[in-house]
Amino acid sequence: MVNSTITKTSIAESLKELCHSKGFEKITIKDISEKCGINRQTFYYHFQDKYDLLEWIYKTELIDKYTQDISFDNWPEKFFMILTEIKNSKAFYINTITHTEDYMKSSMLYQAQQIFQYAIDSLDETKVVNQTERDFITKFFAYGVCGTIIEWIENGMEASPDEICCRMTTMRDLCEKAAYDFVSDNRTF
Image (cartoon, rainbow, N blue to C red; front, side):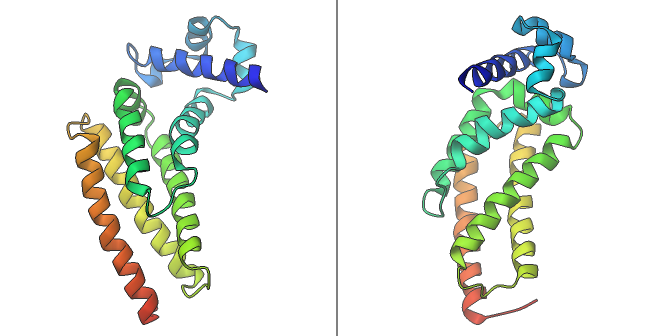
């Protein structure tokens, strides 16, 4: 397992380096394998294709690394860490967001929906909010967060992670208040 993770990380680093000089859509498995010093079969042993590799990078370097033990209290710090990680690998994230059509955007949205579903389930353990409402709220917040991150990346990350995080924290506070008002009033759509 350790050797597998080391190999996957090495393959991932090769792709990230290649993204500095070549558009993601033009990078081939051969390019990645040569850069990493492995043969194509070794690549395919670990990943189905370059999109599978890309999804693994986003999941391990952003989602898994920074969303474990996430809560409403530590959400701003976790969000800041994610944005800082993205900014530190700016060329890679700009390249992959702008050259993968909607593939990474859909993947990010799916991951965000899972995180928000968990958060809503944690807040509403008594199931006051029905599943249809939960799904709507989950999608609403996931689209908002993902849209903000994607737009920030596509616009070259001009605003600092702290600035984006501050705005998102304000939105979180407003949304948390709205969610409590919604649950306490026992409203339905």
